[in-house]
Amino acid sequence: MPAVVKTENLVKDYKLGLVVVNALRGVSFEIQKGELLALVGPSGCGKSTLMHLLGCLDRPTSGKVLLDGEDISTMNDNQLAEIRGKRVGFVFQTFNLLPRLSAAENVELPLAYTGVPVKERRPRVEELLKKVGLADRMDHKPPELSGGQRQRVAIARALINNPAIVFADEPTGNLDSKSGEEIIALFKQLNNNEGVTIVMVTHDANIAAQTRRNIQLKDGQIISDENR
Ligand SMILES: Nc1ncnc2c1ncn2[C@@H]1O[C@H](COP(=O)(O)OP(=O)(O)OP(=O)(O)O)[C@@H](O)[C@H]1O
Ligand SMILES: [Mg+2]
Image 1 (cartoon, rainbow, N blue to C red):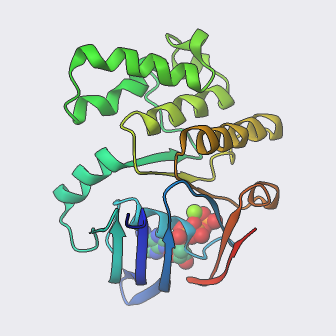
Image 2 (tube, rainbow, N blue to C red):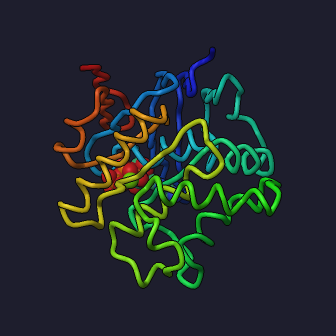
Image 3 (spheres, rainbow, N blue to C red):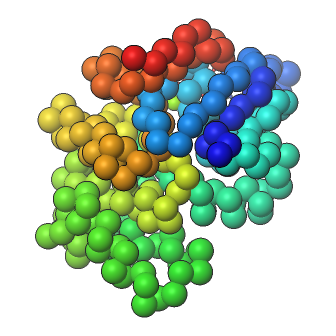
């Protein structure tokens, strides 16, 4: 089986007028199915940029990204959007839920874009909301939920299409330490019990210490890649 993610000499430059920012400067690594890893490094080192390239949100300046063996680095926007919707899940620091929709409706939304028949949607939504511990909050809207509960909804939404990989960018950044710990425990549980492949971007050394593998970026390059 191919690696879930494989990058080859990934380079990303942002051009702002005459200024060029070299956000990634030759990044090569692989992620295998079932891994849970933390991507760490100081602010501005390229973590979000890398996550966006791996998650089909953007294209590299040069180099390759393979997702499940398929080269996504030269795809057009429509092709990227299609792959992203089916094979990638995202969890953000700010949850990014729609405030007027219930928890269940938020989780269900991505299914509408992938052509899952209406009848099959609700059971899958309920199963996932139960899995993340929100069986009794399905009809609550985001403003009626705590931060930790909102992030659980976002995690259920990220998983709804059975993605090959889930990217979480500072998923505990807006949570108090207890809720943050619970979210990390949930990721670990999903990884252990369901084999979900997860990449967590984090500043938090306590979180990084809880994953087997840590990739450390500095100035757009990998400076260490360790498996404990
Ligand atoms: N859209 C953009 N246009 C121009 N420059 C950008 C853009 N996005 C990021 N950058 C620059 O690229 C570099 C890497 O940014 P990135 O957001 O990947 O860092 P990060 O490691 O995620 O930082 P943080 O921990 O603060 O979130 C930074 O110097 C940033 O200013
Ligand atoms: Mg970032």
